[in-house]
Length: 313
Length: 255
Image (cartoon, one colour):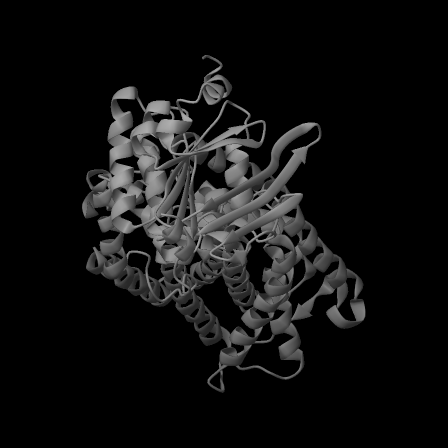
């Protein structure tokens, strides 16, 4: 089973690397954005393992993106410094926010996370002198190992960075899913009382998931910032967080691939719908969601999962 | 006998335990000492405070007054997860399982919580050594054939056994079982109890179990506690206690 999944992963990475080479530039750009978003969607799915739905992942998404923006402003342009720094900031924010929210469940958790992300949104809007208000901060092209790329090359560097980050994120998530901590999170979702009666500290189980989630959302945020070349308070607005939940349901939350596939499909539908029906693209997305819920309630990826399970058992 | 009692250290000491909910007395000056190796049946009419007694010992409820010591250590004020970590296992009247996980995974999760390193992402839940340990527990409880089924698909008897198996997997020194045979068919009842008692004896686990069925208590308990209105009405050997007319009246409402 392990070798099959390894083969699958190798194939996927191969396809993504080739795509950077062969696909038209606009599609590569779209794919890079989709992967960045997919990583952030994984952060939503991590919390769903514990039965929690966060409507405030924008908090970490924006925190990391702005962390990159500030670092650039301070003169740090190196990708290999920017990414860990930004993810670190997001995890730090998660470590603080987690102290508060890890004790809440259901709608209270959802609303608290949403509220925290909107607090950051407010700060980003109001602190004009520092954050540039609604104008945001421009993100110049980063360097990679000190080499400054430009134009096409810069785009490709950011794309391959997104591919690498996606692999790291998916691998980490897979590890988490198979670890005692990941199963304990599912156990908390199924029966929190019993987890306590097995001697496990429930809040710490949730807190650990929350830290991982904030890191993944942060990774998605910094990738998005580097892709778009600009950050603005909208990254912390509740619709950004809501979009991530939307994609999680669209792609399916049962696996690691579901959210990533969901993000790619979402970006494709969105850009085509926007191109051909500029006034009705949201309706198109809504219709797509409706179809998924009616015909594939487990998400886009669920038929593949089912096939996979049949193969391995 | 008296000398042996003198030498042995009690595993559980409950002293003067009291808790009221408004005008309802859930526990009133309950005092009990349990020694290692005992299998204590707790009987009493509905509302006598049997489950409350377990909830107090495991920290789910906090007493207004009184002491609870587990192997000499005061545990009043500790949370259920802390008391569980000290070595007090508990199973439930209505099985508390992880229904979306498989039977084996339910036990694996229980085993993993016993370890300090459950937060270590580098090792999977299904480590060979842990799976082997889980399967040993499943064999003891006769559940190995169902290991890969979701726990939600088990019949009631199986759920009851799995519920106890999860508590047992923690290797508790004291196991509290809340009606291990309730909801189990009359035919399966003695089968379930035979399995439980055999596993507990082999592992040398001391146990308290709440039970409605007097036949079960008579057959398996080494000692019986009778509760009524939060008070301990009688405490002794089953044959003597259960034949006491006053106890019969309190428990069954009949002479």
